[in-house]
Length: 175
Picture 1: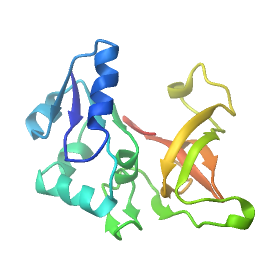
Picture 2: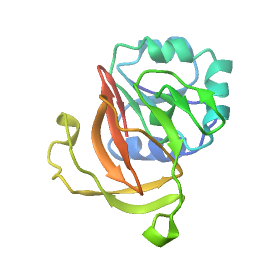
Picture 3: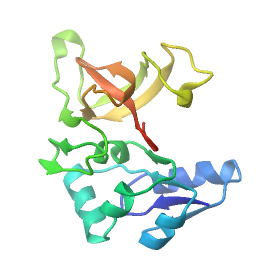
Picture 4: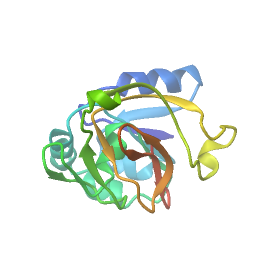
C-alpha cells in the first residue's frame, strides 16, 4: 500500500488521480501509524514552506517521515521540505537532503523569470529513477524556490542558476 501524506497542501488530488489511472492501491492519510506501515510513501504538495512544515509538525509527522525505511518520494514542495532549510518563511525543514532551498532571482535582461514556469531540460541524470530518459529531456516546472546542488543531487536544471531538479539519499527521493 502506498501512503500519500495529507497535510492540507495542494496537488493531493492530482497525485490520487494519477495513482487511480494506473490502478495503484493507496491511502490518503495523516495517521502516523498508517504512514509508518506503508510499503511506499509520497509527500506531495504545493504551498508555502513554513506553513507546510508547521502542518507536518502539528500532525506529529516530522520524525515519522525522517525514520521511514521504505521508498519515499517528495514531490514539489515535498522535496523542498526534505531539505535542511528554506528561505521561504525562513524555516528549518526535515533535514533529509544536504541542501538549502533558496528563492530564484529574476533577471529580465537574461530571460530569468520568477516563478520558473514552463518546460526546461534535466541534465546529469543519475540513478535508476531516470531509466529510459535521455540527458537533456524536458520536464515542466512551476516554482519560485529551489534546492541548491549538493551531494544528494541526481538531476539538475537551470533558471539563472543551476538547481537540484531531483535528489536522492538512501530511500528518500525528491522531484
